[in-house]
Length: 256
Figure 1 (cartoon, rainbow, N blue to C red):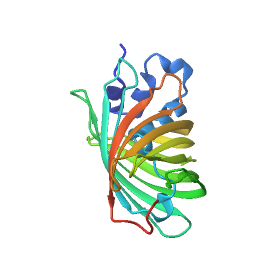
Figure 2 (tube, rainbow, N blue to C red):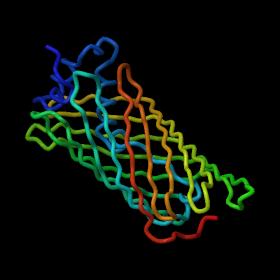
Figure 3 (cartoon, rainbow, N blue to C red):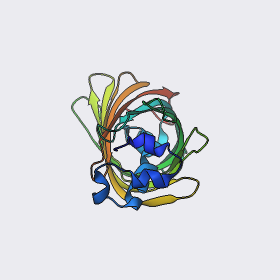
Figure 4 (cartoon, rainbow, N blue to C red):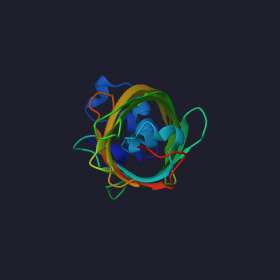
């Protein structure tokens, strides 16, 4: 019998999860599956990426974001819906921003456990370039470095846990749009270490990942994002999601 992905995860042990994986088991090692689960059950995998103006990393206002992500391993699997809040704060030195994220994961099957997910990101801008335009509002591009640490846990008596550490290099571009709006586009290549554990077994490993997002700042303080991401393993799905962001204050300097 082929069992649902999340039903296996919610079973008594991770050993059962890895032994009963459907169809793709011949193409994937136990360590790869453990790594993928560890990443997908952390904020970096559970929630879709967001796009940012690279100039905001160093001196921008605090940002509060309502973020979401949705994925399903295959047709045998239950749908995983994740929703969370993220707070971003520019540290004021080294062009660095810290983001704290807390999220809740709901698996759409009657016997599956829900999840609590949390993590912290530290992102620094390595390079920023601005180009003047006829409107007087410049186009900005930037390259950054982001380190993320996170994890998740099932809310059940036989809870499995997940943990991850990732390094990514976001490539961002911010384009003036109409009089006061901005369009921001981000491409986020990276790789991560993921670990999934139960009471008597754990598996872990490294996997590459790639994300992309587009954001529209409707006003100077409100933004809407759409994002997509994939953590690469044979047969794994592409994850989709969105975000609604609110700037709190004006930050260290205003943008043209």
